[in-house]
Amino acid sequence: MRLISVVRGVSLRPRAIIVAALIVISALSVSADPIAIPTPTEQAVQYHNFSNLVWGINQILALLLLPLSMLVLGTRTRIAAKLRSGKYFTFVILAIILFTLNRLVQLPLDRLRTSSLNQIRNEIDLPILQWISSQFMQALPAIVVSVSAALLAYWLINRSPVKWWIWASGVFSGLLLVFLVVEPFTISHKPLGQSPAEVRLSEFAAKIGIPTTAIVSEDCEPFSSCEIAHVSGLGPTRLILLNKGLFDAYPESWARQSFAHESKHYLNDDNLVGWIVLTVISLVFLFLVDRLSRVTIRRFPERLGFTSIAQPAALPLLVLVLNVIYLTALPPINIFRQHVEFAADRHGLELTSQNHVLAEMVSSWTTESKYRVPGPSRFFMIFRSSHPSDAERITYANEFGLKDKKE
View 1 (spheres, helix red, strand yellow):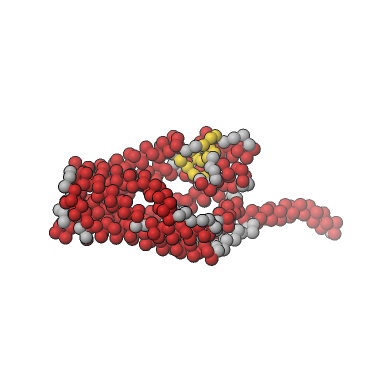
View 2: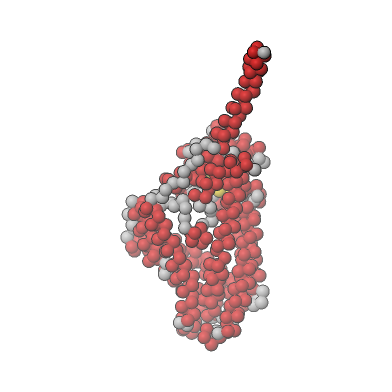
């Protein structure tokens, strides 16, 4: 009997060892030490709160109070009366004044915010006049585009008073489509090289149906001047651009995980989805601008000093209504964008099964930055953030394997 017991024990031991080994390997794969959420510095938290305050006040000043004050004080009517020129020339002058003031009223608080950030970075502030000049030059293209867009909308209002908002949305949609299709050709990039890491990444891409020609290296100097990875283009022109620094300065697993995340945007053609969403949003926005502006004019014609949105003096009202709609729509838009990015994180983790790598990457972005806060305020997430917070992404990555195992 003892001999039989010994033989049975010997025969069962290898099986028990194998089962135990599988359990240990499985546990290690999903319960490796979780990556801790970095603790932000006191300076970073102070800057974050101050930046939110500056953003909020500037939005109120530039988007709401400026056009409202022009309406209440009758500035646009006096300017139109003094010019006594054609309505389009008058409209352009009003638009230039409005959009230039829009940037100027934000400069004082922006200067304080920039100085605060420079202190954290240990950088020297530019002399005030030089800084103002640089800010104006940076804002000039946006001012020109804003004036041009307003002029186009005004021309459409005069040509088609009832359906101008449909035509304006169509023009916006068409221009956006052209930009998205052409954008990859405006970015300096080159095909992936033949290094072992790049070859393995190409093989990985082929397995999930992404051609090697759709993955390129974006040469950014310095590394931080470009996104770590992103998808550019739409339909047949879309590309996955990986920052060259990913291969030069970080582990191969980081490039693989970044690619896996972006592959979701590529395979879903999220830029196409974004174009459709923005087209619908522009249509709804401009429809509301038309209807709400007309209701306001009918309600307060004497107070406003004009009787139609086809008059140059109506510009501040149109801009005010559009800005109110924009600020109201920011929360749901940002929540949608954050959802899209969470879906890309999940897709990447399902492809690589390397939740530890994603958590480590995101953690490093906060650790290396002197002003980044992993757990931003609710205000920041609702109004300013297009991505989930670093803390949310780290926590999600840490728990991803365990959640899947329970399912």
